Image (cartoon, rainbow, N blue to C red; front, side, top):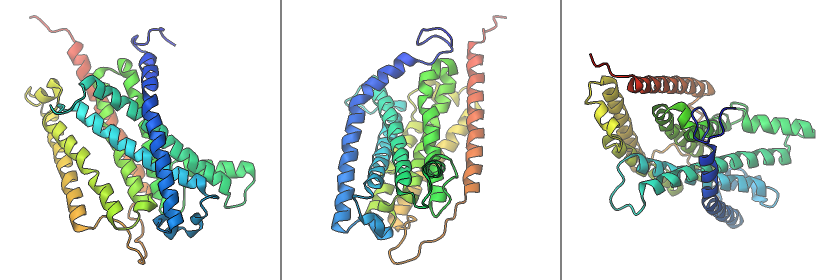
Length: 345
């Protein structure tokens, strides 16, 4: 178990976690209010006959029967909104904060942590309501045990959902959820991990956001078709991409600014690769918006088949895990080198 001290070496910082959970209450309350507003908006669109979801799945027009499904959708959208918000806050905190920002760095960091906790909770509720809706609907007429097990596999087992676009989209959403939990909570184990290793891990949280957006573009029926809702979702990716590029070009941490100047070619190579990737993302989003070719489906035209397979996703996950492990190992090695006593010979 270890010592009781919340910041004792080898322990999880439970005191900070409890404090952040308390501080997240106003944030989580706001998220619930926003979720309720989104639910009302989705419900109104169904009633008005303007919901693209009903256009794809007409049976969902029975909003009373499928209220849990619409609530699931509302939580999905608020989760994506909070993921966008916490990503923006994190990028603002990790770079040089603009002078016009009326929030101190400490307050910015606290907001980033609380919105991160809220995001994970919203993602889980999105999945949990999908599970509950599958249990309620019981499309295959299974027994209670059968329907619960089938819904659990479809909802919470990566790769378990085996029909239509959900084969990829649900898998991506689950990977986002299951990566968000350890990567987000790693902050509270930073004493055990070491500062450098924790920072190396935390950078990979951006992958969670990318997977969440990908899941939404692929499976979000409200942005399924070409048009302004889908274009707006693409446009919203420009601010975090620009902030990421700015953070890479002008990092707040002196050690990051000086690594490439201290005879560390690997650090320079990583920086160049990251800057190139961020610039490519910005260029791609701009090209998508200007061209109108954003991967959406056109009304009245059969959608193209999936170009991504589960095998591709699992291969990408394996590559991601390998890169993550290497990054942590290098960070731990650098940390040990910093603690090593300097020879005076």
